[in-house]
Amino acid sequence: MPTDWAVVYRETYSDLVRFLHRKVWDIDRAQDLAQEVFVRALDVDAENPRAWLFTVANNLARDEARAAVRRKKHLVLLKGEAEARAAGHADPHAESVEERERTDAVKRALETLSDTDRTVLLLWDAGLNYGEIAEQSGLKKGAIGTTLSRARRRLVEAYERLEGGHVARG
Amino acid sequence: MWHVDEGTMNAYLDGELGDRGAGSGERGAAERGAGSGERGAETVWEVETHLASCAECRALLERVKRVRDRAGEILASSSPDDVVAPPFEEIQARAEARSTGSRVLQLSRIKRLAWAATVVLAVAVGWYARGTVFPTRTEQVSAPLAASELEESAQSQEPGAGSGEQIAASGEPGADSREQGAGSGERGAEQAEEGAATVVAAELDRAVAPADRDVAGRGAAAQTQTPAEAPSTEVGAAAPPQAKAEPDAEVKLRQEVVDVSAQRRRSDAGDRLAAAAAPQAVVQQVAADEPGVPVGGIAVGEALMFEDSLWIAASEDEAQDALGGDVPVIPDLPVIDYWTAPLHGGEMVRVRQRLDEENVLELIVSRVVSDVRAAVALRGIAAEPAENEAQIAAKGSLEAVAIRRGDLRVVLRGPVSTDSLRVLGEKVR
Image 1 (cartoon, rainbow over the protein chains, first blue to last red):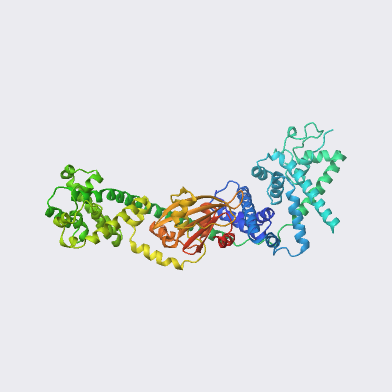
Image 2: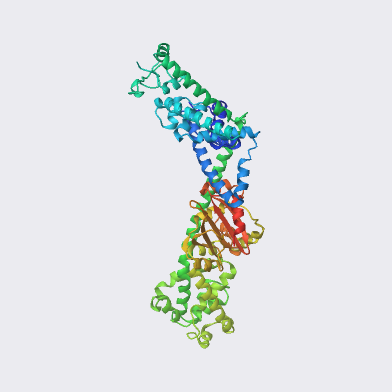
């Protein structure tokens, strides 16, 4: 039976954007990428549509991250580091300094996780079940609980450490 | 006594443990906690039964739950607010547009292939004719035929061709036959074939621009002689009056044709094709449009042409020779290498410069008079609007911009944004 992408779109779009946002840390770009994933999906009849979507999203986010690194590198080269830094922090969606700092702390806390732990955690947070996460990450389904447990604990520890450091500095 | 491990606790809290007897539990006992005093529970029922009798595991459950909830809060604090999905129809429209674009691109490729096939055919004919036409005319001169026969032959081959063929008929017998390696004894057997080849040559000349045809036609005659080998009296004996009346012009023409021949020999097959297969008017028209081309992105066709061009590694000196002057580069970026490729009316040069350890920037430089856009048109590649840069990017993940430096056109390509390329372009010297 062909995939009803309209239904999948309604049910999955926001999860996909959330997942991508934590990969690229730019909500506009995350939405662009999510839409790109669905544009590509329309030509596909996937056995597990959600798993397919997150696989493609993960790949796109990875490519995006590489491209962003290149762009940033050369913008720094061409326009001066200070200017580029200012541009890099200009996030119109961060309404306050506090929110921006919180987002930054989450980002840095996630960066302390291993790739596998981070991917499993973000896929769970995006709404995938253990079976889908296993398919996506290449882990055994029986290992997902343990991996999630470790990822959660490390995220909390890293975040508390960063927050504590921030409070101590402040 | 066995205990429930953290992984199972997480699976239990996440609702990922199977119900009693469902057989869909997350993991078998053997998989988990081996040697740690922990034991796996395969079902919600097993976990709950154990928790009811184990205070230690209940405490662990509380800790795991706190961490799990806190991790959820942390992630939620960075979640984007109010994500609104655009209508699904928008996604469908984008997919449809892309599919159409892909078909157009495919069609464009088919057209390119058709052009390429035409080009190959024309090159083959041109090559054959080039090797045949001049010897044919020469042999007409060298063969021991009566002057009247020669004149008649020349007239029949290209009526109204002017003095060129007639002068050819007046050349000194044997003078060029040595050069061409065609003995006069072979003449009779090859007469019919040569006649046909001459007609082909005439057709080819007509395909070439008229000015070029004149020079080539007259040049074919002049090529058969050197001043020492063609005394004026012999010319006079066989040549029609107008040829006899213009000996200086003949020498001049001879020089012209030597130049043309040398130039033709230097050209590669693709270049000859461009000259032979494309009407000169088209070239001029495209070239005339060129001054209006703004600094900006490059056309898809141009990008494809770069991909298809026959690039040959060159030294800096060779690159300078190809361009007829200094090759512009971006100061402070190390030059990796130089390449040249034929382009209608000349050559283009590609310089690769290192941006950093991973990335390389390309500068493709051509004279405006031999602009790549003319070549694009000649090769039949549609010069599509530059705004379709996505297709170019898809070709090689390269952005590209074109700039002008004097009478040079420089296309910069590299794995950086067009903004960066433009800034780099300003540095080109």
